Length: 159
Image 1 (cartoon, helix red, strand yellow):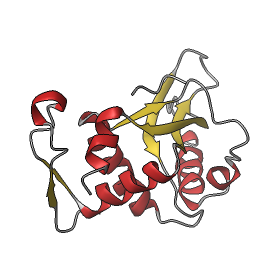
Image 2 (cartoon, rainbow, N blue to C red):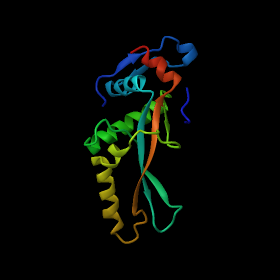
Image 3 (tube, rainbow, N blue to C red):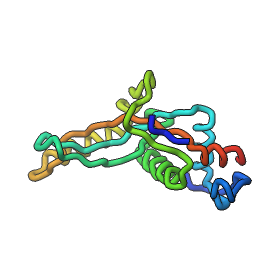
């Protein structure tokens, strides 16, 4: 693994050691707090990314959405987009790390393959592939994981 150490009312948190961890009194939304607390309970959680690929060239690919984290298979696409945004923010704050190099062993990414979000993605790619000149005609999923960083653990300790 390459892991290193909904926007409602936001809360102000500090790990108590700003000079050493440089947290600078972080403000977290309720959704950010919930995701961080979940990662504190389970060290690695599964994520995927939706990738556009092409039968015209093996070198042609583009990440359509990442990271994708599901709390349930029938989660709405809008909720998946919100989670993705929150996770990117947490990664930018260096509270979590995202890794697509090695999927979690024994994780069972079936939930992601069967999810409403992936079906929407696949249907969108299928609709686009019928258009002339459309290059991306393959919907692919890359499996990965997310974990708290040492800075993430420090902030969770203050929640």
